[in-house]
Length: 74
Image (tube, rainbow, N blue to C red; front, side, top):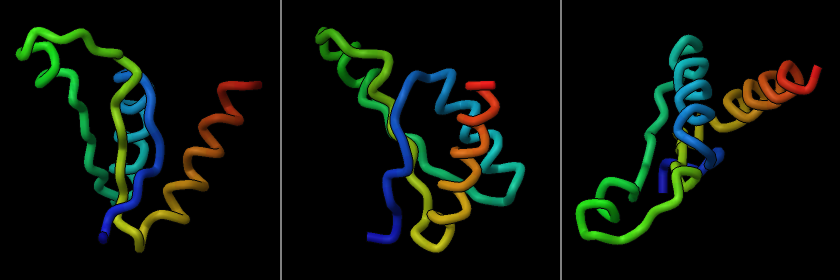
């Protein structure tokens, strides 16, 4: 598999990470089962959104997430 799961979380968190990654020329894949679950009549959790990056970009993407989390804590 060429893509590795980097993180999961709410739509807002995943969108923030996605935008930061794209600004560094890392293009992630966002996977959400929410729409399928909603259309089928099932409940869904809004924190079930996953973000994947190519294995060649994984280390750089992971470091970027760490820097974002540090900014949130301070």
